[in-house]
Structures are given as C-alpha cells and as structure tokens.
Length: 414
Image (cartoon, rainbow, N blue to C red; front, side):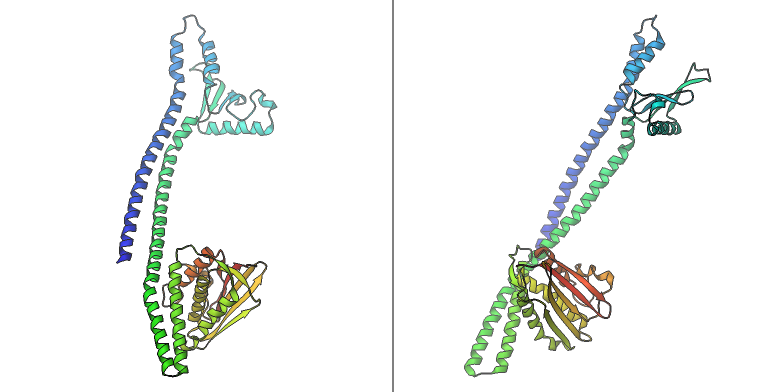
C-alpha cells in the first residue's frame, strides 16, 4: 500500500515536471524563432535598401548630369562597401581583374597572385557560373558583344534564409530529444528512489521479527542448558543463531541502499574467510558435491570497504557460482592476490560458463542465465563495487561448459 502511494506521488510529480518543461520550452522556442526571423529580415532590408536609395538619388539628378559617371561612382562608393558576399569582376575572357569579400589580396594584380590564390579565384568563378550567379555586361541591350562579367556569390542574408528551416527544425528536434531523454532519466531516477524506499522499508519491517527470533532463541538455549547438556541440540541452535544473525545483516544491508556509507580499512582475508566458512557449512545440504576453496597469496591484505556490503558482493558471486555448478557438482575457488597497488579477488567456478556476448550484459538488472531469480544479484554487486567502493568488477574469463572467473579489483590500503 505504501509503495503504491509512493509510486502515484512520483508519477504525479513527473507529469508536473513534463508540463513545466514543455510550456517553458515552447515559450523559449517561440521567442528564439521570432528573434532569428527578425534578424534575417533586418539583413534583407539592408540588402534591398540599395534599390530605393539609388532610385531617390537618380530622381534628384540634374538634367545635365553624366549618367554613366554617376552610376560608376555610386556603384564603387555606395554598393561595393555595403555588400557582404563574394564579388568578382572579369573581362570578356573571364579573366578576373577585381574582387571583393574574398580572402585574397585586393591590391595585387591577378597575374602576380600566388598559384594557390589564382586557382582559388578561378574555382569560385566556375562555381558562380554553374549556379548562374553572373551578369554579362554589354555595350547596349541589343548588342551581343560582352566586354565584362560580374560574378557574385550568395549574401549572408540569403544564406541565413536558406538555413532557417533547418536551424529551426534542428532546435525543435533537439528540444524533443532532450524532453524524451529527460522524461526517461527522471522516470529511472524515480524508480531508483522507489526501490531505495522499498528496501529501507523492508529492512525496517524485518527488524522486529528478527529481534524477536533472537530473543526466543536465547530463551530456548537457556532452557536446554537447565535441563542438561545436549551437544547436538546446542550445535543446531548455534547454526540457527548464525542464520538469524545473517538475516539481520541482510536487513541491515537493505537499509544501507541509497545511503552514504563509511568505508574503513579492513582485512580482506578475514572477510573472505568468514564468508567462505558460512557457505561451507551449508554446501552439503545442496545435494551436489561442491568444494569451496580460499587461496590467498598475501596475508593481512587491506582495502577501504564497508564489510557488510562487500560480504554481500562476495555472497552474490558465490551464489552465482553455486547455481552454475549445482546440477553436476564442481569446485569454487576464491583467489586473493596483489598486483602493484591493487588487490584482486577472483571467484572461479567450474560451472556452465557464459558466452562472450553475456560478459557485460550479465551485470544488467533483469539479465540472468538461470531459470529462476530476478537477475538482480550481479547488478547489485556491480553497483556496490563500482559506486560505493570505487573499484571494478567484471567477467575475466568464461567458457561454455567449463566455467567462469569473476574478478573484483580494489585499491590496496597500506
């Protein structure tokens, strides 16, 4: 019930954030489009302003004015300085003799330019000609004789106008992609928070019955001691107490999920030995003959760990190995050694093995090679080692039908 309420609150919160995002995003996009459109229109107005300006000055000319001289002067003084696009003037043979807005020296004759600059100008002329961006200059409109050419490129305003649909479409697509990504990321974060809340609530609920079981176990132990020594019964009670203590530790681990943990230098040999001992006493009950061995190349090997969470990782790896060899029996070896400044812990089994395609996927939530389980054990192990302990965990080697080696790497603590 409580989990359902949390889920509904999270869903409502996510919907509110999505509404705010899309309303604010659409408003910003509208202002951006208006600003960009006005910017392009302003540049276009500057480009076409030349025509009415020329017309107004032409109307104001006196009757005895030299029209050709006026047009040449207007072109050189008014039009050329204002244009922002490439312009090349060439003779009747299309040999350039003047150019503007090109990254080539203007005060040098074409023949004296470097070979690279000459090829660059001729390449521009060819490109402008192919797009029909040229004006042939004739002696009069009825003459076929051309005395010069004007080649021109696209103005900055025209380029902006051409790319405007693509820019606006790209912004809209980016906005949608970010929205979708944000929605899924927020949903994933909410799900993580829900699972953290569920884990903490589970740990809290486990606390009371576990404490009660420990109390009843102590009472039973005292009654057995009062009635006389029964070694077999005391041994069984000790096993029960160990299991209940282990259950208490599991509840404690769930309580640490999503919380900040404090890592301290711990002897890994001791932690691994305790974990291996717990499993060794329970292996005979599994049916198949399974041998668990701990091999350490070094003694008193230390690393900064949280003991409970690190044991949880080891237990998940050992359980995974047990499941892999439970049908046929086999051997599990825990190998501890050092290389340079790192501590290596390898869990090696002779189980069913993994195909290479599963090496990374086996750590994803919900991915499992077993017929039962949720596939969360190795995912938890990866998170504990990499996020909480700044270490690495991986499938080192595996071969189908022969076995798998998992490896944990931690920084050694001197």
